[in-house]
Image (cartoon, rainbow, N blue to C red; front, side, top):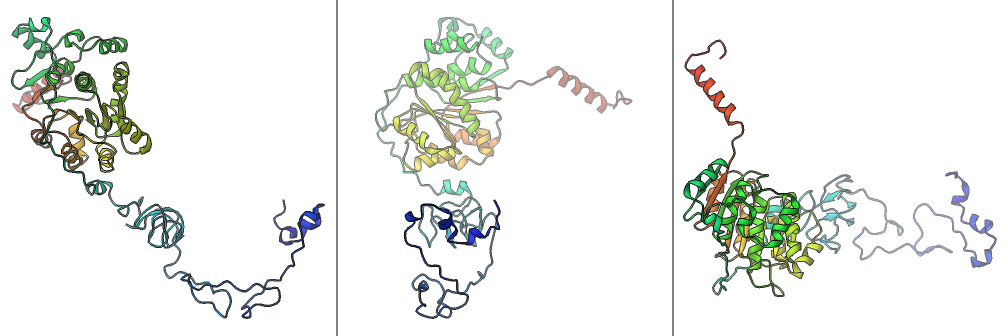
Length: 430
């Protein structure tokens, strides 16, 4: 197609070529375009110029169309800008043109806005607070103060020691822990279990465990399961991949089964906080393997995903919620969920959550949960900050640590060589 074909500028070309000209109606006269000011009142066949009164625009120049004026700040193209959106100096939800966002924040094109994502805060994604730090937005969400004056008691000591475990001697217990690098602290620490059946889990748990092909409990599970089932607070120090997810999930299912069923409007019974959505999704996958067999519902609440499905899960009612702190506070602030029924709280990878700056959000969430809850506090390391937060949240806890030092033999040999070099021996090699 020739872009310079004169027929494209000829308004009569279509009529001449179309054989059904009777459908086109009366032929419209063509008025030549006038350059320059139009006499006031128009001429013959010339429509009057549009009125700009009351629109905030400049007055007509010479009685005709207003002359074009370049914006004083020039044209801005790119990301950011002074309040993006559609329109002049505003956007969706600007102060000048109404929309679905507030405080001059939005995305789109407009004068002095750029074609990217702008905001009243000078760039970023915009939002209610001018495109600022999302952590600051979470801090501005006020959660209602909870009244824990009339708490209903609940059962949390659910451990029944297997007779074979009760028959273990103290020497056998010490040997079992030493071979598996298990260190325990606390009063009245229960003996570890050696096989899955000794934990007295429900049959559906044992069936899923057998289907997954697990041979024996990992060290953190062997000692962590009896501690968690006794209903006491627990500190678990173990590296990623040690089996700590099931170390707190399987006692959580036993805990849920011992509580009254959820009523309409009740929140979850178990809350698991995780630092990242990847870890939260991984925990949810493990929970689904066991929960589907016992009709125990769970959902995963995390940012970066649509809120609609998550809100529907919460409104239908779930016994277990796995969440990242930011999205959970958002849901609490919007009253899509409450934590009044939570009696089993898990903080997974607490050291990582503190490194990511989630301590204020964790404190805000825990303030919504009854103080006589059972809290399980899991971490891969034990720095001073993690220990201080544990002292604030936990009461008379057990502590179990499984820290395996790799290549101990090679490390000891290296230490001897360094000592020999220090003493002046083997100088030809040091």
